[in-house]
Length: 123
Image (cartoon, rainbow, N blue to C red):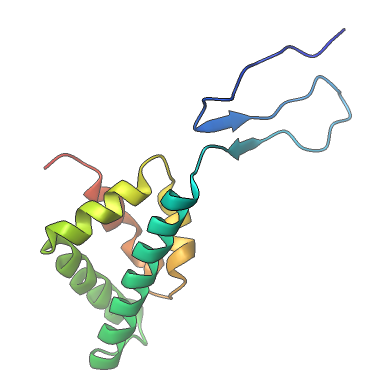
C-alpha cells in the first residue's frame, strides 16, 4: 500500500503522518514562515522582553501577584501603542501565542499569554 499524496506546498501548517504502525512520531510542521516574518516576530518579542525588563526595574516581580501586575502594565503599554500592537499582531499572524511567549523568554511572559491572545480578538 502506498502512502497517500497530500500537497502541502501552500499550507501554513503541514501535517506529518505515516501508515507505518511502528512509526515513532506523527506530528505537524510549520511551513511558509518567511525570514521577514520570523524577523518581525523576533523583533516584537525582543521589544516586549525589553519592556518587561524595564518594568521589572521599577516594580517587584518576586510573587505571582507582582508578576501579574507587571504583565498587566506591559499589556496596557502595548494596548496604548497602536503601531506596536499592530506590528505584534501582524508578526503573530498564523503563529501560536506559545511561540511568542517562548521568544520573549522572560518570567512574566507566561502571565501575559491571555492578554496577548486577547489582542487577536476584534475590539
